[in-house]
Image (cartoon, rainbow, N blue to C red; front, side, top):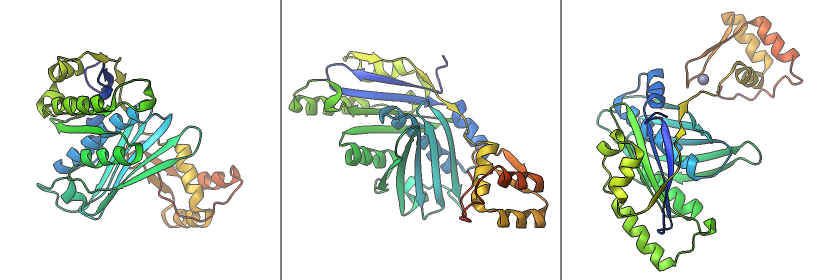
Length: 298
Ligand SMILES: [Zn+2]
């Protein structure tokens, strides 16, 4: 397996700490190639993609997860979607000059929502205010609030790559028996070592080398790599479903004015075209004429 576009889980034995590492290259570049993002937006998008992989591996679910930041600054939206098997897509919306702006400055007043939609069962969402200076700080708060688990997240980007390292106290139900005082000391020690990680190391070295540099006195159990790929979940059927929700009268109005309906997926730029026959078919195949409610397509 390649040394990039993968993620590894690891456990630091006897310390009650687990971790996740990821390094994205082609998957990140595919996202960047879809839109002409300013450099600063590219950076936060890369960090959010890396974060999504770290979180999706840590929060156990089967289905999809969306990390979304909505702001009132130059950047109004950052969204990363990720499935449990590490298929990623991402998008940012911005309006104006982002030059030399950091994460906080670009988003302004903002909230961060993490939504998990399991293949089976109820969707659930956690919302955290963006009160940290960086995305990693905000996500650390999220874990502290929602999971009550001490978590350290480091995110990096550069040279068209993005990656990250997460370490986290093992939940008590994991079967690891460790004295609470000892666990606090171990946590301090492990996070102090992890904090010495540099962007250059993370973005250029493989996982085993990074972990050896950080924790060479520990016994680290490294699990096999899991592949990460860019894959958009859009389809003609999903686009048709979204159009049905808009309602027949509105669609027919567009057809009358423009002769066709064109929907471009904002994540992957795939174009879906519907003519008057297609639109008629949508409603002969569907039991409902839609509720007239307008929805964002894709
Ligand atoms: Zn798409």
